[in-house]
Amino acid sequence: MWRDVAAVATTSDWRSPRLAEHATGDALSVLSRQLYADHYNGLISKGAPSNSPVAQSVDSPYEPKTVVIRDCSDATTWLKFRAETGQPADDEPGGKHRIDAEVKLGADGAWRVARFAVEGTGSC
Image 1: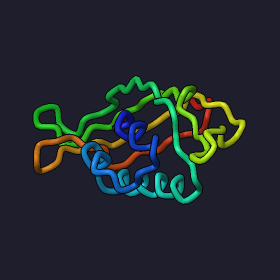
Image 2: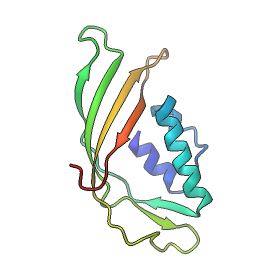
Image 3: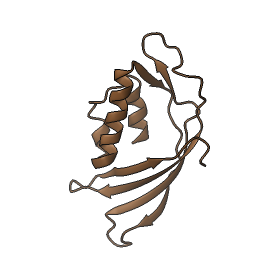
Image 4: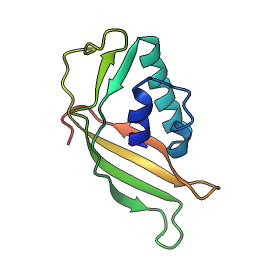
């Protein structure tokens, strides 16, 4: 999901169908709203986060339908820039963020992130 978000964020295309390939429900809504806000404010992102997800729990060991994942995402090189000038949007450095996500198995057999929470910089 984060690879798709990083790719779409290069143009802040909040309507990209790539977002729905790995996100659904609240997660898809949050991502779309954030990208729309960036578009509205003339911002794009460059770079990409580095992720190292680890499964924390599974609802069933036999036929899982929900998995909770914890990640320490390194967004040091994933930063926002002004679309018109290419200048940094602010002077805040990227950093590491704890992410907790609920991933669900869809009726189509695909796993998608349904909800996630990103903690502040330095949270992992």
